[in-house]
Image 1 (cartoon, rainbow, N blue to C red):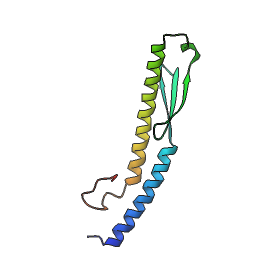
Image 2 (image 1 turned 135 degrees about the vertical axis):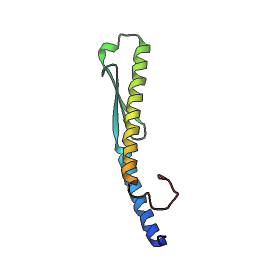
Image 3 (image 1 turned 90 degrees about the horizontal axis):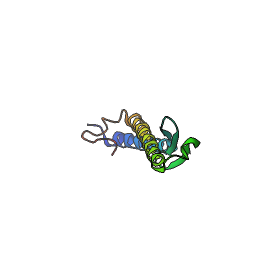
Image 4 (image 1 turned 90 degrees about the vertical axis):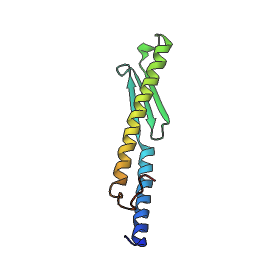
Length: 107
């Protein structure tokens, strides 16, 4: 069994790495599109809506169509953001699987 000092060092290293990944996630942005690119939204890492862009040709159409396209673009951006966050977490926790047997990461 690993001695306590080594386990504590690994835990501190993982904590620092997780803080780094959290900052990276918060800075990450993802675009979502719908309607063949006529509606675009941009989200920040925690899901904050940063911007919405709507093609002017949609402005005269039925408002329900535009609302549906905005929701679809938001869902697309959220899915992409979730994928980016999952990849960041995988890379952050790589190599820490043997820290403590039976523990699953992230804590």
